[in-house]
Length: 318
Image (cartoon, rainbow, N blue to C red):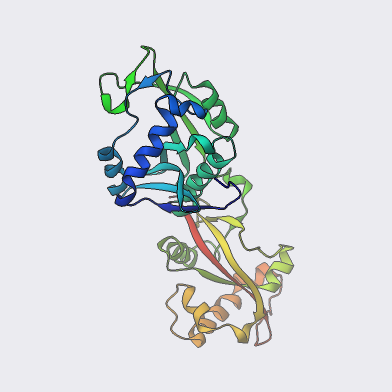
């Protein structure tokens, strides 16, 4: 197979079940699996999975079975299960002939991306047989940490294979998907009080996906403009982190050029640009804003430069 061809990821469907079972078996069971380094042939015989088990995973609304394909051929897969504030990772399989070329890293990275960016979870978890030292080390190099928490192997349940040893057990590995919040910049909507509370609630509900700031405020504070892709921590009126958002667009325009789409996406119920501007002028001409700018006479007009930001909610931290 031409490994230079790009990988394509997609969610599995019921039609993929036979191919998934074949892939998983080839990666872990029997002499054929010895071509790759993920083999468990010396530890377990029998099946690694079966069509009924895979079909159940595919049908589970809280689970995504991710397929990796190259030129239309299935070369890797993994199971990702949404369990509240963490995702469980399993059924990780790479075709033996494809192992050692970085495909496994790509599949794992795609699973982490989905868990973090789509589901907004904070942690990945998995269990690995403790005798799989090389595999454990592989995960540790990719940010997973030993917990020392052990789980017994399900001896007697042939769905998980036929043990060839009596000392099999699993260890739980974990990896945080978010950096320390203290490393992210703080995002404050308005000033502490009822207005901030309403804006924060609009962000958390998904109603608010845009915001407007004064360029003069940024210049006064010496704050650089945000960049697309930058993430920040939204705090509430008590200074508590409540969300992580990511900037998707930034522009600087004269106040007169703010359009209706931006005004509506501020999530404050504005039906016209005129309503939006009147509300923002009340805020910008208020005592708190003028005090923050150090200008008791500050006013805006059509030419006043404003910063238009669009963002998306990445994770609700409440």
